Image (cartoon, rainbow, N blue to C red; front, side, top):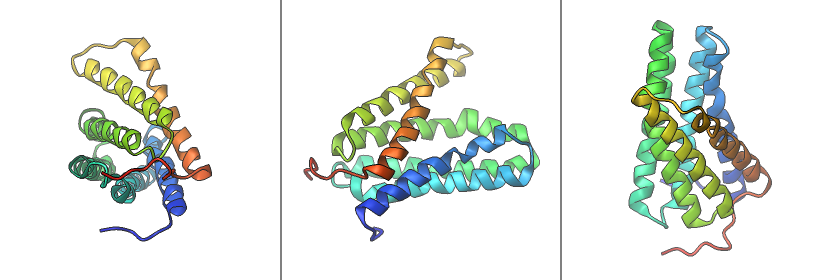
Length: 185
């Protein structure tokens, strides 16, 4: 399934969805049930939307890895939507979903996303490398917490992934994707 839209429009849509995915942070600002449910649903749908829009661009470079990416993002997005509904019954259970379950498809999907961006050169490679470094910091921090440890310095590096995603969204609004280095295998 491909969506027939211009490359510039696709880039803008992906940038918008990257920003909308941060709507998940509404849960940290309020305990009001409807805003959190709506924010989680929009965030989850945005995560899925990014993967669907990127699929035809990534597929020529590594189809099996692109399919894994799509599957991980579908799982992540669905978990976010489920977390919104779970919040209606138990706010703490929502936190458990995000802190212990949803985070892993996010991390694995992010590694694949930035790997495919690096491989395809749809954006400058420094952005993809920056994303890989930020994802590595997140994976390290999350893994340490899984075993009851924390290294504050590692946690400070989490700003890398947030800053990278915000930068990438703006990049996509302004510059879009670059196809000049694309060579399909």
